[in-house]
Amino acid sequence: MMVRWSVPLLFALLVAGCRMDPSADVVGTWGVDLASSKLPSTSPEQVLFAQAALSTVRVEIRADGSFELNLMKSQKGTWKYDGETLYLSPESGSRGARSLRFIEGQGEVKMRFLSKENRLEWKLESPINATLRLMRVAEETKA
Image (spheres, rainbow, N blue to C red):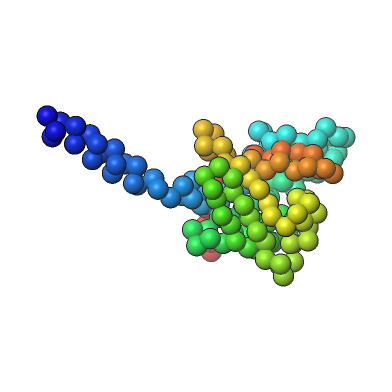
């Protein structure tokens, strides 16, 4: 009788042990999914400009705990993930840290991981008032 219960229990523990590190969910290269993002309703010209600018945004989350965010300027720093929220902390000396603070109103960027959709969600408050959804992008081949 004991053997019948111990095999499924051992299997369940083995499977649970394989997913102890949730950071694997967010490691990779991400880009803005314009179709599911919510941009402020402004003039058609401003929407086109925003879409063109956002289409080039890339966030590379590396397994070593570093990141690089390309948003007009390149920002580098470190990240941490608590299983729900991804926190990006730019290096204080990086050229883009000031622009990130303007966008976020603080020194740390917070993105929520939406596990069911496999997306990152970045809510930008005033003055932008937008919600960006990021999806994984294929790694670009480096020549």
